[in-house]
Image (cartoon, helix red, strand yellow):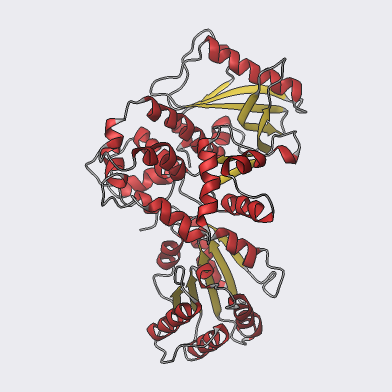
Length: 474
């Protein structure tokens, strides 16, 4: 059963209709459902299917590749290198029945061991043989969670594979709407506030949602997912980063710095100082890879220099891990139920809801009626001075129709109330943006909340309000 993913399925099945042989890369965050999508779309019917070995040596990778060839019906010994391995694959293909031959290589980045020359052998297989076949009958689909590897070695390759990909599919997490559909399909009796809270914890990662149990409340489900000794996601954090990165400890130092740093984000220098890592190209690469994998976001204020870029932790699960799971250290198996109304819980909700809104900008634009309007979506911030307080706006939408939407995002159990102090803070943001930005459009203040805004004396400054239900739009 596949929820959503209609566009991706059409693209994958469309590969079979092409006259030329096809080379497609499917990539995205770990646990997002790449393998399941490909297998279900092709009904598990492949000429050849293989999965790389996590942290395996070259010999282990080649042995596993031989085993996959044997599973496909071939008798052969372990190849000595990747050139020999792909020669064996050629033999398998030549002996296969006529028609399209779908080859699926999962977790390709794991197969790229030091001095193994996997890319050279793959290039030789594709350029020198697969595309030269008169039959033009090969559909090669490669997949990987190491998004940075896929980007560097395939999407931006400067060697023989440059421009050879015929298709690329980046699989992104489910939206709130898709998670709601998943809950209904699996008979989970959750309302939208429940789906939202679970999304703030799990993000749109189908694998995480698959562990939810019907008959349990949100708090009970969260407890059974993370806190008992045998909880299915108890060790997910370590697995998530160690599988993706060769030296995960340094990547985790960056993540930890951002989790402890200001909610508004940290500059590159701030992260270096906090993490105590060395400056240089390696550090820059780590930031790029964490961004490509969807764990952090990097943003530059709409009108400030590139060097003033801020970094934020945006992965829902990782944010939840640092603000909630790690603090408990698994000592209380009912931690979530027991802290449901705590101050720390409410602080986490505020942070997490903002992240969810940033992940649903298309839905916010639709609610504003500007889906078809050319829009520059960005953030804006200015540091405080002796004359003015600092200000940060996480979501700014500069529209081609002459307006700019300044979006404020607030989580509240009831309708949100703008009081005197908050109204003063909002006015400071609007005034600072109007005065210091280069944007001369008319400003509209948009409140994005869970349950609407109380219409008190300060409500007049709001031009438009968007609620949780709007975020569930298609």
